[in-house]
Amino acid sequence: MKNFTWINGEILSYLDAKINVNDRGFLLGDGLFETMRVVNKKIPHLRLHLSRLEKGCSTLFFPCPEKILLKKGIEEILKINVITNGSLRLTITRGDGPRGIIPSGDTNLTIILQVFDETKTILSPIKLGISRYLRDGRSPLSVVKTTNFLPSILSRIEAKNKNYDDALLLGQTGSIAEATAANIIFLKNNILVTPPLLDGPLPGTSRGRLLKAGLCKEISVKPEELPSMQGAWLINALSIAPITAINKLSIRQSPRKEKIIKDFLFSDIK
Image (cartoon, rainbow, N blue to C red; front, top):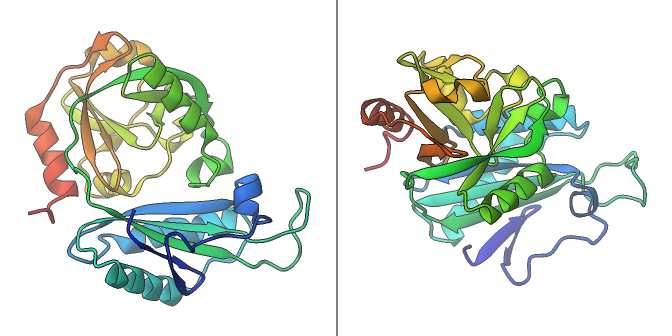
């Protein structure tokens, strides 16, 4: 993490940056976040992230911050932290509120911008274990990136305890949904496919770009179909990781298809 944080228009040192103990994001997970890649002091596909954020705010019934404010804040925090390449997290909560579940009539958002050093974009091959936690694609919250991340946290902990790198969550449909912090892409019958939203995946920005470009199709994948997969990858805004095994099943590799995904998603990386 870099030295400075942006909170509601004020730039503070990392040690001085604080939120109110009554903040509903802290107490109840009543908030949203976006994680974005920083390349050459810019946010690629910022419009996609802000569009998803706006939809999330609508779902959670609180106002979305002005895009001009957010863009100005992003510019300021990147400049003061002297970051060229890395990542940025935007967190928005409903802000302070009275005790209890129902928020007050007045919404006083807490908006936080944090930046982080550059990490690898092409990750080492990983092994996944299938989690006991499920995603519900029928729920409005399944398409919202909220600050309540317990199913993913617990899935990742349990996967690590079993010597897997990450966990794969199924949907209520019984089909595969996603990993704990990434969408999944399969190579099925020589076609790149990803689970449809009904199966429970978050509509990730990288996933959306592949679909829009026609490089990938939405098709359900059942766990019993995994032996026939010709390749599999985890993708998000920051990285791509080839999957070599799910539970004890080895997954075949396809370097050619992997290069197509990588070149499309991260062509701005030199």
